[in-house]
Structures are given as C-alpha cells and as structure tokens.
Image (cartoon, rainbow, N blue to C red; front, side):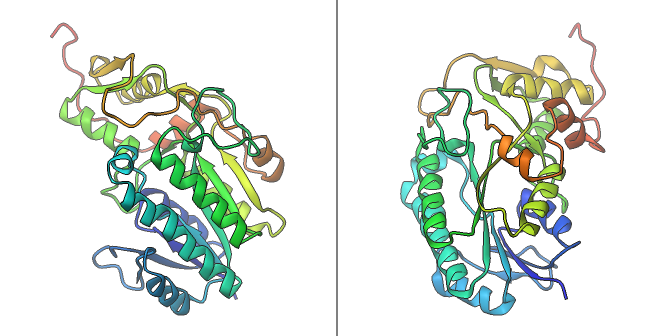
Length: 304
C-alpha cells in the first residue's frame, strides 16, 4: 500500500507538477482553498482555519504533507501585511501543528526572499535577512515549522519555470508568454539575479527528498548558475522567436514597490550531496521549461 500524501495548495503551478510526479510513489490527496471545477476527490481547505486543516487531515489521514499554499505576491504582502501574516505564518503554524499531532511528515516550500541579496551566495545555515514583508513571513514560518516538526523538510526556491499541468496557470513563464503573445513590453530588472529551476526537475527533487527518511531540515533548490531577470526574459523571447525589443531593461528599482534582493543565489551543495537528480544549469532549466511551448506569434519585420 502506498503512503498517503496530502498536498495543500495543489491547484497552483508547482502543485500541479508535484501531484503528478508524486502519484508514482504516493496515494495523493489534493487540497486547495478554491477547489478547481470538475475535480472530484479534491479537498477544500483554508489553512488559516485550524478546524478546516484538521478536517482535511481527518479525511486524508496523511503520512506526509506538502505545504505549498501561500500568498507569494511580494507587493501585495507589503500592502496587506495582516493578510500575509494570516496565510503565510498562521496558516503554516496550523499545518505544522496538525502534522505534529498526527505524526505526518511535513515538506514546506520557502523562498530565496528570506535573504536580502547583498551577498550573492547563500547556504542553508546562513541567517535570514529578509528585505520585504513576504520574506519576513516565510522566515518566521520556517522557524515555526522547524520547531514544531523537527523531521520536516524545508525547501527554499528562487524561481520555478514552466507551465501548469492543468492549464490556465499563472507562473512567471506563462506571464511572459502571455505578454509576448499580446505584443506587450516586459520590463525586466538587469540587476536582479536568480538561479531558477524548471518544474519537472523540482518535482523529481521533491520526490527524492520525500522518499528519504534521513533527509530533514533546509535544502536550497535551484540551478547551478545564475541569470538576471532581464537576460532570462530575453532568452525566453529568443527561444520562442518573439521580438526581442519587447524585453525592456529596468536599471533601477521602481518607487513604491516592495524591495527585492539583488542577488539571491541559493547554493545547492547540500541538495547535490543528498539527491541523485543532477542540478541543471540555467540553460538546461530554460530548455526543459520551454519544451513544448508554442511560439507566441510570427516575428514581424524588425524594421518596424
């Protein structure tokens, strides 16, 4: 009999890939606050409501739990700190308490935004220095998870590339492709560096970590090298044959937006020593993420 896995936030981009990959080794129970239409078997759960979380645990009786649900819009978290606190901190606490009570092992996804990006190289044991309220909530949630669930896995991510398994997703790549199809300019920072990971490789890594009972604590997941957000958007446009002029360099932060880290590179040495899945370079990540993605439009006359 397969162990039972409850995925909270399964309707999202990462959740859709993780649920598909996890089915090979787990009996998967998918849960979300808003259950997708025509999706029998899903569990409706509000992680900010402890009774709702407990009801989902009672229905799924999970051996393992993955918490993906969060509000990750950095500017919205800055504008609505009470909402971010309720979802990202109180919600994580509710789930961690349920795991501690039932003995379920928790895998919690966090973010490179727990660092301010001033050093450009971060290991798992570096002290968090969040530059914005989103990062603050995730750093506090990490501490709560580690305290309540000592055997938990905490996986920090930078930027995950790909498209939703179920369609209609809102990932970074889907946003870029949507703007390219519409002929909209995409203003991208030249000074923000990340080490992204494609959704397929991430799912393989999560599967390895979840299946390894000796793995616990914080792991950084990302590419072996880094790329600026501008160069990433430009590479996407080039790959699909879109007009490069649509990728507009942004050379300074936009006033009124929440601060971001400039270079949040997550060192992946610990992950590489624990998992057999190779850590890809940015070029490989982009190729895998764009596999099967249709070109947005035929290239127009460059003299236009």
